Length: 221
Image 1 (cartoon, rainbow, N blue to C red):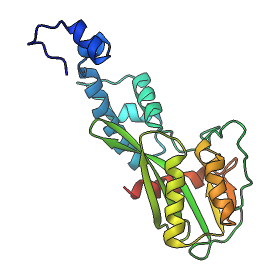
Image 2 (cartoon, helix red, strand yellow):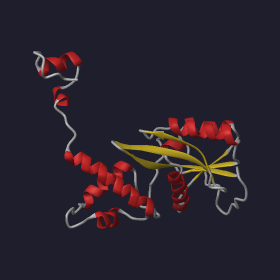
Image 3 (cartoon, one colour):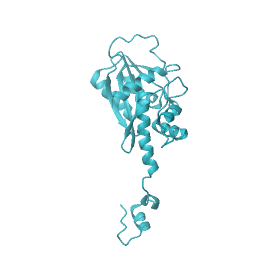
């Protein structure tokens, strides 16, 4: 975009293009490239052992030639939205003012398709960053009914995924999610209410539901 062969100075070209001078000199650093490569390794290890936290991941990926700092692993895992799967507090946070629904699957025997659907997120590595994948899953058959990719964790692509699943596969009796802000938003819950679908949300001690949903979501890619 900036042409160093013409008579106009870099500052003047930046003014015309309405960009900052710093962006004209910016180049991707070696450290950023190394982070992306490490994020892919973390993701591969996490998919194999989702119960690994930052300590175990650091120990697995560190070598004598490349010792890794745990704080770096923690930073990248936060960026990727990865958390070790075990009982923990506040893994998913509802949006302010969003309604939380009761958990309806306790002691429920799931014996047929379209009885219970579920939805969750996972992280997909890309050549220059990552995307978020949401999938709608039939709890009985474990079939992925629909999915969407997004570079932001808003509710729009979650709504698109559930609308496609309903259009293609009918409607479930119950739809179960965690208490993330995307699933507690009125945009998402209104779609379920209009179809007279019972809304269920994971509560305390239901981390295993999220683990199963996250696993089958990862298979959809």
